[in-house]
Length: 330
Ligand code: PEP
Ligand code: MN
Image (cartoon, rainbow, N blue to C red; front, side, top):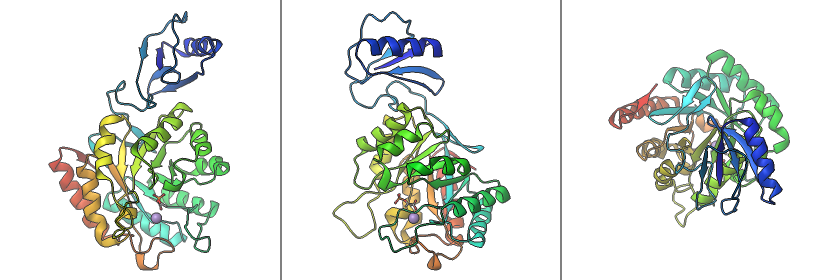
């Protein structure tokens, strides 16, 4: 249950009162509300601490559910807002490789209309023998690219121990598909003080994905952007199966922003633009797409990264589509 109270003092008092009845309780300040949260089916009645409203939801999804918070939640990434009604574009290479590469990419995507720069410094690679990312040196190069272009930066955090370091540089922290159910990481991100891009695990249901967002919110961080990036199905023709239905569903059932990644499900740059447009048409609030100055020579995901010309084409088409859908794009 969610108990909405009038302020921090009441919140703390209520949490103590609930816990004194043997029921676990969390106190969070999210989206302008002071909230005491208990497990959905816990029964606590006759409380003395004054409460403004009690929200009883029948499922494990509470904080992130649109059933009680009807208005969409905007999330700021640096000085740019991901929000319903407009299209947010995050673009950049799969991995940060060299200063020249990331600066070239940053300048180009900025001029072409991107809202934020992406680039992995810690890479979750299937084989331990492939490029693993530059680590802190990569974060420094991202910061340099931000300084030069003004674009906020998003990058993946893999190891919970690296959180302070990644949070120091990143404007938004990406949770990779392979870590979506790393609950230690999710809990820690509750205290990151930075927005989180939560990628859907490729073997995870929509409910598991939303529960991962619930973990981050319950531990104190309400700035979560959900990212659909394709799932594993019986069909192996493309790298993953983009689940556009999930985007339509999640937009209606959660108040959090939802964006899509067309690059990883496509696995091949020839299919990225149509998938990106499908993501937006399904109702997503934006895209995160891989773009590289020389994609064939990229150190990771070479086949799927867009050329600069393709990115220009994508932005133009996304803007036309946004207009047709009655949404704004920068
Ligand atoms: C990435 O964004 O480069 C990446 C590794 O994505 P995912 O976690 O979705 O595979
Ligand atoms: Mn990649």
